[in-house]
Image 1: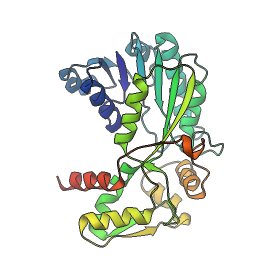
Image 2 (image 1 turned 120 degrees about the vertical axis):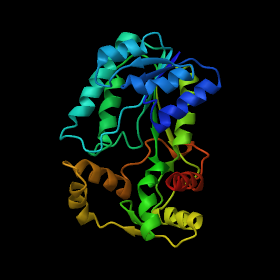
Image 3 (image 1 turned 180 degrees about the vertical axis):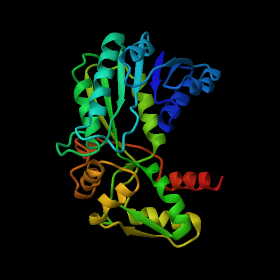
Length: 289
């Protein structure tokens, strides 16, 4: 039995489908029991648990051979990341109680960075989980190609891709969620010992200019990338409802300045197979529906 958190999201659902396709037993861990119905209909067990509820999580993980951990993204955390600290405490307590044979935690590129930024939430949780004795794989994927979903409508309407990643010709490690799900599926099925860090990127690094070019090719319309000036970020993010934009800004600085990157040597980083074009095709198709 493999317990999957975040199963209602893009990556978690793909992992579950991968496992079901190979006749693995899956337990869907959901916060809203109603959202587990479709998974029950596909043959999954369903367990209800909130990520902050250690007792419910322990019950959901009990008897599972492997557990996949995906924490909900918090884009506007409170100062000091109290949410991440609470999740870390909940997960460590639940896993200590349930004692699965192995765990896969979906972390992020740059989790080793010492500069405080939005991704430090994963650093906090990784540090807590590394105190546990069971085998844990920390899967650290690159920037999600699917983040371009935020650009689809503006690109369609204006022909402009507004980029916080800059300079516009700087290649950034990116990866498709399908590749993340495939890597996670493999790790869940692999028997291992100890803790290990698995870093993952797509077949090639991508620049904002390349994203604009692929959008243009697919849409048949001119698309140009434009850098969003750094001095405007704070007010822009606040106008969008953020209360504490500094962590997000520092994360973007980390990618742009290069201190958010993979920890291991280049030859140790796993490579996915899904190209940017395939992801953008899917995003454009979704907008057209």
